[in-house]
Image 1: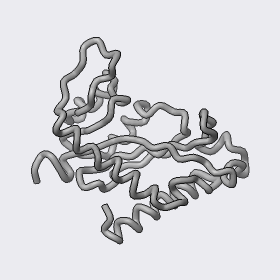
Image 2: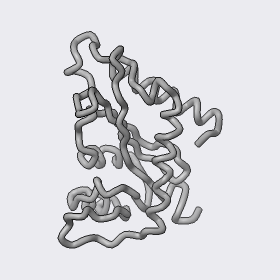
Image 3: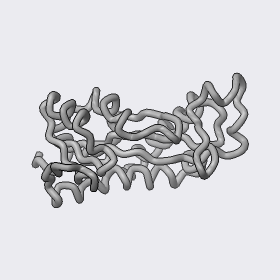
Length: 172
C-alpha cells in the first residue's frame, strides 16, 4: 500500500448539524444533550477521523459551539496512520506535539496569524477531500443532515446506522 492512501492516511474534520425544532426539548433538558445555540440556532457538531479509503475510524459528537482542535486528540487516540491531514483550524502547537509523539506526521496549512509557519505537503493535503466526501455522503440522509432526535444516544445511533447502510451499499 502506498503512503498516500489506505490505512497510512488519516483525515480529521467536523461538520455542523442543525437541530430541528422537534429535537429541541428532550426529557431532562437540552443542557444534558450536546446541542448549543449558535448564531444559526441550536447545533450539534460531528467530529470524524477517516482513513484514506473514506472509512470512519473515530466519531465524536459535541455541542455546535465547541472548538474542533479541542477534540482532535480524542479522535486520534485509536487511529493508526503515518500521516494526519487536517485543515488550518487544527494548526496548534500542542496538537502537533501530540501527533509527533504518536509517530505520525501532520499535514496542515498554517493559520494566517502563525509567526513561524510550518511547511506542509500541498499535494498530499489535496487528499483531505475524503473526509469532506464522507460528510457529504452521510448527510444525504435527511435524519443526519438535520437532527430530529432529542437525545445524543439516539442521534449517534442513526449516524452509525447511516455509516453501516453506506458500507453495505459500498458507497465509501
